[in-house]
Length: 310
Image (cartoon, rainbow, N blue to C red; front, side):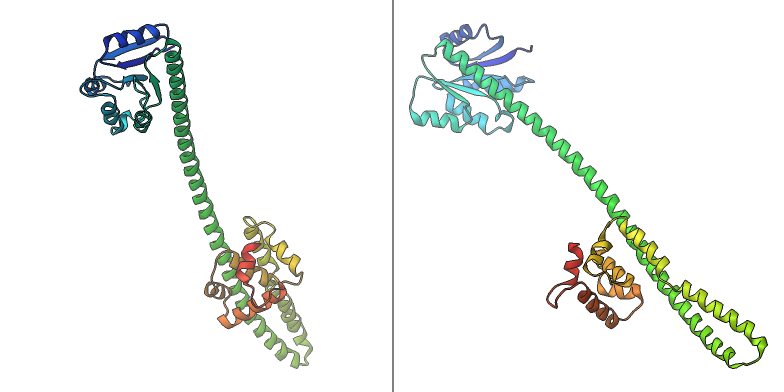
């Protein structure tokens, strides 16, 4: 076990010898100074601070109070454990000693048992303080590591979320474009079907059947089921049960309403949602109004706040 170093600062050679004799069996290494004036040089020349200082209060030159003040203003020595020893027991002296960082106080004449007990207690306290400081350091390091890891995970999540949101928006924009194009084709086929239907020649019946077959295929292509299934799958990867909870409010909510709600959940504003849907702002406002009614919200309730609460 590493031996503790105890520094005795006292102008009385007799008192220093007395303390050495009292503590000789406590496994200490001892250093002695006969005045506080020599303390600065002593500390400067040492790589390590002493584990404990016994400081006499009344000394010629730099006395106990001056020594304490000198130590208290230097951050390197603020944690240095000190026991003050004095022949005076005035309350203001005791208070001054503690104000300047003293951990304990002994009155002369000092008994052996009291000195050993106080020294042991102060060293135990100092050891506990160092252990707490080490634990705080470890906790701070672990917290810093945890925060760094959390920030990294958050950055990855945000990046994934942004990519997913961009994918959802792209899917919906492409779906709107395809639907619009197919609607145009469907209208043209409908017009052609009317022209063909006016002809009574039997040789036109085959063409009419093909046109109608194309119309049926277009109706299937323009169905929202496939695009909605893809959209739902991507969105629910990070927002599970969101759509189910909305449908619990009203089972008649349409896929378009659910997409609208999803865009609100994604923090998109009205202009972005209208642009994504390919509709005018007036149409979007009407859509929001109908959605609020389906969700059972009154005029004073915020649709956005309700969506984000789900």
